[in-house]
Length: 124
Image 1 (tube, rainbow, N blue to C red):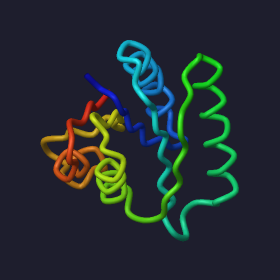
Image 2: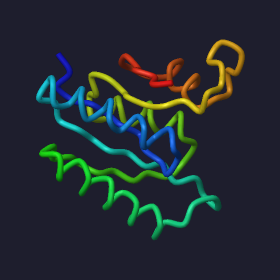
Image 3: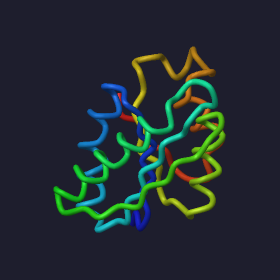
Image 4: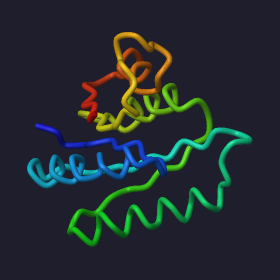
C-alpha cells in the first residue's frame, strides 16, 4: 500500500519519537524509506545536518531498513511537498510539536497537509 514513505527529519524530540512510527510503517509494508532534512539558509549548520542524517540512516539500517537520504535547502513545508511529488511518495510521516493543527495554520505540519500531493500521517 505504501511503496515509498517520506520521513522529514530534524533534531527535535518529536522527530525522534516519530521515527518509531515511520520504522513500523516501513517494516509492515516493505516500503522504501526516504529520509529528508530541510536546511533553512542561515539557521542550520550543513555539517551538523549531514552528521545527523548519517546517524539517522545508520539507526534505520541497524533495524534492517535501508533508506535513501536527501538534504535540501528552503522553507520546510514547501520543500517537503516538492520532494514528496518528486519521489512519488505514497505517504509523508512527520511529527508535530504539540501545536493545534486547527488553530495554527503556520505550523510546518499544517502547511505540509495543505501542500502535500499524498496523504500525511502526523504523529502527535
